[in-house]
Amino acid sequence: MTGEHAHCESGHGCITCGDQALEMRVAEVDAVRGLAVCVDDAGHAAEVDVLLVEPALVGERLLVHARVAIARVGAEVAA
Amino acid sequence: MRFVDEFRDAELAGALAREILSVVEPGRHYKVMEVCGGHTHSIYKYGVDDLLPENVELVHGPGCPVCVIPMGRVDDGIALAHRDGVIFTCFGDMMRIPGSDGSLLDAKAQGADVRMVYSPLDALRVAQKNPDRDVIFFAIGFETTAPSTALTLKRAKAEGVENFFCMCNHVTIVPPLRALLDSPDLRLDGFVGPGHVSTVVGARPFEFIPADYGKPIVVAGFEPLDILQAIQMILRQLADGRCEVENQYRRVVPYEGNRRALEVMAEVFELRPHFEWRGLGFISQSALRLSDAYADFDAELRWEVPGVRVADPKACQCGEVLKGVIKPWECKVFGTACTPERPIGTCMVSPEGACAAYYNFGRFAREREVV
Image (cartoon, rainbow over all chains, first blue to last red; front, side, top):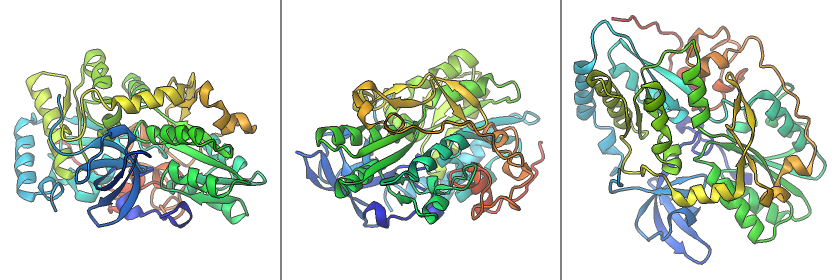
C-alpha cells in the first residue's frame, strides 16, 4: 500500500489525521531494521515501525498510528 | 470480535448510563469537554450522548489536528507544492483544507504534484524512489503523530536521503488546554483526556488541570464504553468533591507515557516560541519545529515560504466551535454553505472535526433542555 494509491476512508475516521490509532497483531518481525508486518482485525497487513515498543514479539497486539507502533495493547499497565 | 465487542456491549452501556444518572445532581448543568477529535467522532458514531442525562453536556475540544491549522499555514504548504520539481506529500484530510485561494487538492488539479500518504515513512519511500525530485512531507498532528515524523527523519538521516524535507506543523496538547481553561467565556466541569496522545506523553502532563484549575480529567479510550466510563468517572469525582487525573485507558496508556517516543521527539524537534491556532490565536510553546541537528531536512529553511497571516472566512465560526462556545449547528453556514463535500471551515473537513461529526451522523440541529 503506497502513498500514491492510498485513500482516506472518511466513514471510519482517518487514522492518521485524526490522532486515531489502530490495534494490530504482529505477524513477522525484522528486528535488524526495527520493522514488523502487522495485521489488523480486517486482515489487512502493513509494514510498521516497531522501534518505540521493542522488542516486538510475533502474536502480540500493538497500537499503531501512522505506521508506527506507539504502545502495546493488552494487560493493564502500571498506574 | 475480541478486544472490541466487550467495549460495545449494550447491557454494560445501560448499566453505565444508570450509574451516570445516579451520580448527577438534578438541577445542576455539567459541561464536560472531550479534548480529542477521535472521541467526538466516536460519540456521534455510536450515539454515546443519547445515553447521557440531559443536564450533562458534551463540549467538543480542539483535539482534531487538521481543524486547528490556520489558513496561512495551508497557503504556505500550497506555495511549496507549486515549486518546480517538488513532490508534496500529506495526509488525506490535509488535502481538502481550504487555504485562502483553494486547497492542496485544487493545487494538484492545477498541476502541482501533491500526493496523499498514510505515514511519514511512505513519504520517505516516495523520496527514495524519486531521487531527482525534492519531496516535502507536510507534518501535522499532536504527540501521537510526532514520533512517527521523528522516526522517519532519523531514518532519512541514517540512510543519507538528501531529497526529503519536512514542513513541520506538529502541535502539543497541554498549552491549548491551558489556554482554554484561561478563556473567560468557557466554563467546564471536567475533561475526557486524549487517549492516544497519552500513550506517548502519559497522563502525568495533565496533572496541572486538577492542581491549577480544580477540574477532573480522565484519560479515555475510543470505544463507546470507554467514553461512557470516563464520563461516569468524571461525574463521580465531582459528586465526591474530588479532582484528579484518572486513567480509564490503562490497557494502553502508561501513566508516564512512552519514554522512547519522548526521547526521539526531543532529539528531532524543539519547541517553537509561539504558534497560531485556529480560533485560539497564538499560543506560546505550543508547536514543534525541527531541531538544529535536523535543520537540513527543514522545508521552511530550504525554501522561503510566504508566512502570511490570513484571517479565517467571516462566515465561518470554527473558532467558537473549537472553543466549545457554540455547537456546530449554531454556526450560520453549517450544513448549508459549509458541508463535508464543500467545506468552508476546517471543522467540516476531517471526520474528527466536530462539524463533520455532527453533519455525518445527522445532528443538524438539536436543542437539549436542561433539567
